Length: 419
Ligand SMILES: Nc1ncnc2c1ncn2[C@@H]1O[C@H](COP(=O)(O)OP(=O)(O)O)[C@@H](O)[C@H]1O
Ligand SMILES: Nc1ccn([C@H]2C[C@H](O)[C@@H](COP(=O)(O)OP(=O)(O)O)O2)c(=O)n1
Image (cartoon, rainbow, N blue to C red):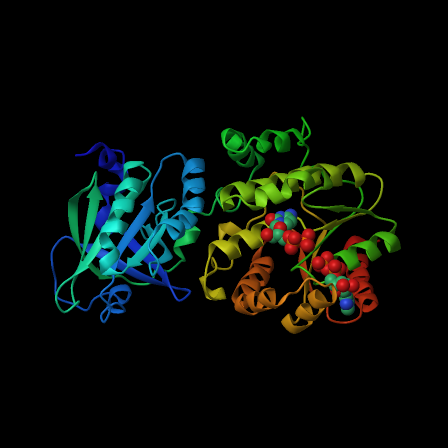
C-alpha cells in the first residue's frame, strides 16, 4: 500500500461503514458505501446530477496534527476557488462513522465541467501529494443510476466502492467532534491548543501571557455576578452601563479589554483556534470577576454562553432541529469556570434588531440581506443560549424602552441576588 494510504490506516479500517454528507442548497445530503454492487436508486447527491455531465470529486482533510488540519481545511476553500477552472462548484462535505465521537473528517465536494477534468485532476493530484488530503472521484453508469467511488492514492485509483443511499443520522455530524474543538470545557484544553498553534500564530504566546499565573477562575466572590447575553444590537451595552450606574457595580466584558489587540487577528482563524481565544478570554474575565466581586456587584457583557452558543450554532447548519438535543453534555457549563449568580439573555424581534443596527449606522444593504439569509443562524444561537445549563438563565424581551428593560432586569436581580 502506498505511504499516503498507510498513514490513513485507521480511517480505512472502517471506510465502508463511513457516511458522507454533502451540503447542497444549505441542507446536508447523505450517502454511504458498499463493496458489492446492489440494485437501488442513486443517492440524492448523485440523482441531482442525472441531467448534467459534470464530474464529481471529494477531498477529505486527514492530517493527524489537528492544528495543521484545521488551518489547512480553513484555507483550502479559497485555494480551490482560486485554482479550479471557472464553472467549477465547491461545497462543504464531511465523512463520519454514525454515533462515533471524533470520527468526523471535513472536506469539500467538487463538481466540474467534463472539458475541465484534466485541469481539475492535475490540481487534485498535486494536492494529494501533500499528504493532507484524501481524494475520491465519482463516476456514474450510462443511465446515471449507479455510481462508484474511486479512492486515489499517489495518482492511482487503489480502491473502489459502490455508492448507496444512507439514512439521515440522529445527530448532526458536526456534533461528533465538538468537544474541545468547537467548545472547550476546561482551561487545560484551551491552553493546549493555544500553545500548539504558537508555531503558526506567534500572537498566541502573547495572548497566553495575559492569563494570570495562578488562575482562580472558579473562585466565588462575595458580591453577585450578573451576565447579560444576547445577539449583537439587542441592547447589552445600553443595559450593562445602566446596571453599572444604578447598582454601583463594576462592569466587565468577555473577551476582556486586555485581549482587544488580538481579537481581529483570531477572528480570521479556523474555529478551533478562534474558539480557544474566546474561551481563554472567559477564564481571564473570571479572574477579574473574582477580584472585583469582592468589592462590589459585577455586571458582565457576554461570557461563556456567547462562546458556546455561537460555536455550536456555527458548527451545525440548517434548522434548530439540527442542534444537539436539549440535555446534551455539549451544553454543560465548564466545571473549572466561575458560575454567575444570574444570566439574562436579551431577545429581540428580528425586524426591531435590524432597525437598531440600521440606527447605529452598521447595516449596509448586503449585510441586511445576510441577516435575512441568516435567520436560521440567529434562531440556532438563541436556542443554544436557552439550552445551556449551569447558572440560572432568564430570557428577557428587549423590545420595550431601555428604561423598561432596565427595570425588568433590576427586578430579576433583586429577586435572585437579594440586592
Ligand atoms: N430598549 C431599547 N429600545 C430602543 N433602542 C435601544 C434599546 N436598547 C438599546 N437600544 C439602541 O439599540 C442599539 C444597539 O444597542 P447596544 O446596547 O449597542 O446593543 P449591543 O451591545 O447588544 O450590541 C443602540 O443604538 C442603542 O441605543
Ligand atoms: N465571550 C465571548 C464573547 C464573544 N464571542 C464571539 C461570539 C461571536 O462570534 C462574536 C460576537 O461578537 P460581537 O462583535 O457581535 O459582539 P459585541 O458587538 O461585542 O456584542 O464574538 C465569544 O465567542 N465569546
